[in-house]
Image (cartoon, rainbow, N blue to C red; front, side):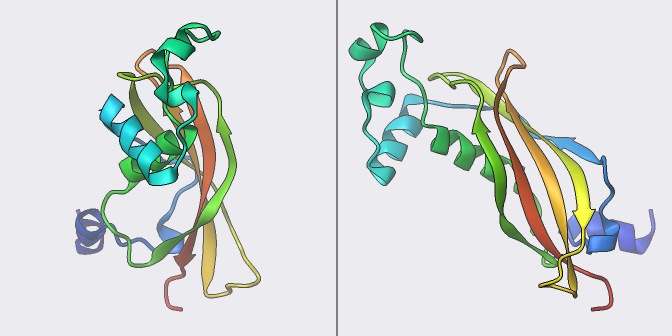
Length: 157
């Protein structure tokens, strides 16, 4: 392994030119607990019965409480954060969809693939890297999808 590659692997430092379309990674799993749901409700003020009222949920089509979509999104984003890349920052998220509910005690993991790299006229010293995020449950069912846009510094800029 070359010194540059070793440094990149240890620090996470990658310039725009280092990204490769199609590259993939997958996180380990994380189980969503009742504590996660209760804390998220308290932090956001979202106490809707879909998340908090087990008896009411028994009368609904899914028959049980589900985690907040915003909780799953937040947890998934955190799961994908590894080594800090000082050459990149989050530029936002596009095409966020809550595909299926996540229930208490479901285990999720995140698949990330580099979908695209493109120019951005507003940031000529940087490029945009688009990561496709797919959150799956323990049954391999997709529960959330989104595109993460990274603003990444170009080498030599």
